[in-house]
Amino acid sequence: MAATAIAIALAACSSSSNSSSNSNSTSASASNVVWKLSSDLPTGVPFNDLYLKAAGTGISSATNGKVKVTEYPANELYSTQTLAVSALETGQVQVVVTQALDVVSLMKAFDGTQVAYLAPTSADYFKIFAPGTAWFKEASAEAAKLGIELVPIVGASPGEAGFGFTSTTPSTSLASLSGLKVRVAGAGIVTDELQKLGAHTVDLSTTEAASGLEDNTVSAALASAAFAAGTLKGVIHGFYDPGTFQYGPYFMFVNMKAWNAIGTANQNAITSELNSQIGNYVTNIASEQATARQTLTSEGLWVNTATAAQVGQFGKELQPFALSIFQKEDPASYQALVQTVKQLNFPLYSS
Image (cartoon, rainbow, N blue to C red; front, top):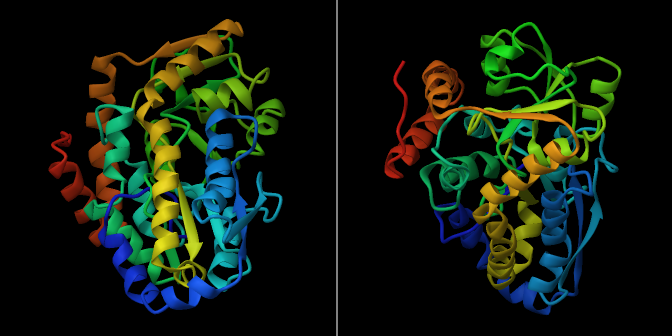
C-alpha cells in the first residue's frame, strides 16, 4: 500500500523514476487508462470529499485526461483496506487511499505515524511524514518491496484525533479512558498506547464507528473533531481533544506497474496537483479543527481540550513507550523517524 500522501523532490521517487524512464516514450503514445480506486473515506466530511476529489478528478485534470479514476469510496469495493492493498499488489485496483493504521500489518514503517506527541502542532506533524524526509524514504522502500508506489504527496488527515464519548459526563483527561471500550481504526501502536492508559480497544472501520457506539459495542471512539461532528453526529454526547496525540494520516498508494506506465511527466503532474489540493488543507488544519469543535459545541455536546501541562504529561508517559515498541517492530524505520524528528528540531521526550 504505498503512497498516501504528498510531494517535494524525493528519494522516494527514485525507485519509480529509474523504471519510469523506459516508460516515457511508451506512455506518450499510449491510449488513455482507467485506474480503479479503493478508499475507506466516507463522503460528506470536508477532508474526505477533498481527498477523494484530488484522487479522482485531480488526477484526471493533472494528466489532461490521460489517467481517469473510477472511484469506489466508503469501502464499496472491499470490506477492509488490507484486502484492498492486496488487490493493489496484484493490479486488480490501481489506487488505494487509506489511513496508516490500515497498512501497518503489511508495511511496519507506517506504525511510526501512531507514536504519540511527535510534533508540537498539527502542521508540524505532517512535516515528519512528507516526501523528502528519512521516514518517507524508508516507507517508500517498504512499499516498493510489495510492488507499490507511495505517491510523494504529504500525508494528510481530518485533524488531530480526540475521543467522542457516549457519556454525558465531561472528560478532562486521557485518564477518563481507563476501563472503557474504545473504538480504534485498525491495530497498531495506538492500541498499545490506549491499553497502557487502561482502555480496551475495539477495531471498527470508519463505516462501523457510529453503529458501534449506538449498540454499546464501544462507549468511546478515537476520531477527529470533524469526523465526530459529521459521521458521529447524534451518537456521542461529548468530545475530548488531547492535542497532538494521534492523527491516523491518510496516504495514497498506486500499483507500481501502473505508476511507471504513465511516465515521469504524468507522475510529476499528479504529485504537483495533489500536493496543491491536499497541502492547502494541511496548512489550515488547525483552523479546521477549531471550526469542528465549535460545531460540536453548537450541537450541544460538551467539548474539552487538553492543557499544555497535560500534553507534556501525556507525552512523557506515552511517547517513549511507543517509540520502544516501534524500534522493536521496524528498526530501520525507527531510526529514520527519529532522524527526521531531530532534523526538524522537534523535541523528543525521554522516559
